[in-house]
Image 1 (tube, rainbow, N blue to C red):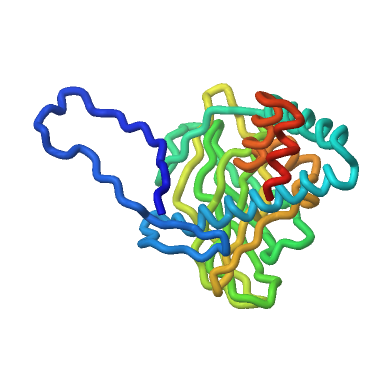
Image 2 (image 1 turned 90 degrees about the horizontal axis):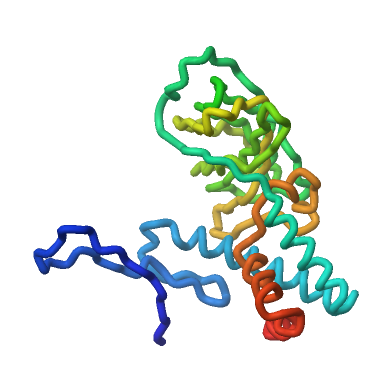
Length: 262
C-alpha cells in the first residue's frame, strides 16, 4: 500500500557531480496490532511502538473525558495542556561523550528519584559528577520488580538550577538483561553541558519507558504523569500536541470529531 512521506531534504552547496547525494531506505513499518516489519537498524520499532502506545493512552484519556464529563471539560483540559506547553521550562543543553570540559571543581550529586507506583523497574540509587554548568558520568542502580525479564529502559533526567527552575535535561537509555528481582547498574560515559549562566544544584529522575524480554513495553499512565513535578517538565506526547493543535487551529467541534474516529 502507498504511504506519502513528507520529508524535505537539503542539498549541500557545491554538490553538482550528478551522483546521488542521499539514499533513503525504509527502516520499518509498525502495524495497528503493534507488529513490526523492517531491518530496524535505527531501533525504529522501539521508538514507534512507544509513540503509538502514548498516542493510544492519550486519545483514550481525552475520549473518556469527553464521554463522562462533556465537551466543556474537554475544552478546559485542552486549555490547561496548551498553558503547560507554553510554560514548560526550556534551556539550552548539549550532550557530549567523554569527560566534561568545565574547569570548576567537581562534586558528586545524588539523584532524587520519583517512584511511579506501577513502574516495573525501580531506581534505587544514583549520582552524577557536577561541575558548574556540566553534569557527567551518571550512574543509576535499578531493580526489576516485575515478573518479566527487562532488556531496555529509559530514565528521564530532571535538573534544578540555581534559581530553583526545573527542566527535563535528557533521557538515559540502557540496554540490559535484567531478570525478575535482579538489580543492575546503568553507567553512561556522557556529559550534559548547559548554558554558562546555568549552575546545576540538584537532580531527579524517573523511569520513562521499559521494554521487556518478549518485546512488549511499559509506559507511564496518565495518572502517574499527573505528578506535579512531571506535569511541569515532561513534554506532552506527540499525539497530545497534535490534538491540542487541532483544538487551537480548528476549534472544539473539530477536536470532538477527531476523537470519535478512534
